[in-house]
Length: 344
Image (cartoon, rainbow, N blue to C red):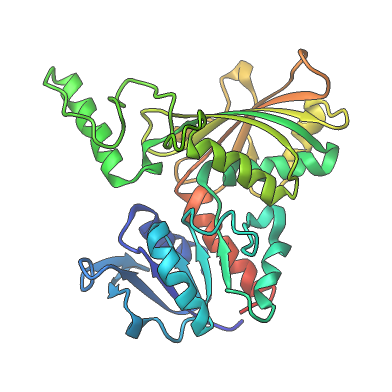
């Protein structure tokens, strides 16, 4: 197998460092990995394969000669720099929201729609592939298997999203709030969220924009699911919440299918699905939990049961590490699929 020169843009962030770790853990065939970040971080070092790599400034003179560039640096950086990398011949795997709903850009979860990325080989394509939102990515893996078996008709989803989805500042904020409360000290003013997150549940993940009663996080879940599944008319209702968990997004998913599918049939299908681990013995207190998902690349699915209130309806509880399948792992899996499909 050939080796590939890989840039990781945003390498000093929470997801960027996980991308570097995942490249090593999965043995990606890289001849060189170059961590990139802003001028402020240039010259610092990041851990890689038991050693250290020096961070290179994201600048015009430093972006030539890469086969793949994996981005986790925010939408504004991606908007400026992803096309520049694409113009040099690299294929960009972008983790931001910038390109996800662009009709010309494939939005990919490899277990569900790896063939969508083949478009990057066509003449004139931007050579950008979008990585979906974390809550979307983990949910798609079991849903694809269910759709293939019985067809999706309607989804009602409630997410319980960890603070690491917001970033390092939110992790630090939760830790500081918990410490203040347990030590009977004054709470620091909230910065990452509108309210205290410690020992609380916020019925808001994301932002309300333009008078919409749904948050942008909820709209992402709805629109990205439709795009990845190639089901533009799929009925989806979403409520996204933020919970005081460091890592791991949980989702209650009510699935209505076109054709009958029993809980036992769904369980058997999901047990054979790549990327899914069924944890479903509620009587024995075995079900998916965020503390078990952290550090696990699989999506955990449990509480699989029939919903008697509607025809052809199932309930699932879906949990994943939002820094892995929700971000870094899915991006690296896209890079692996590029190699397997001989697109690089």
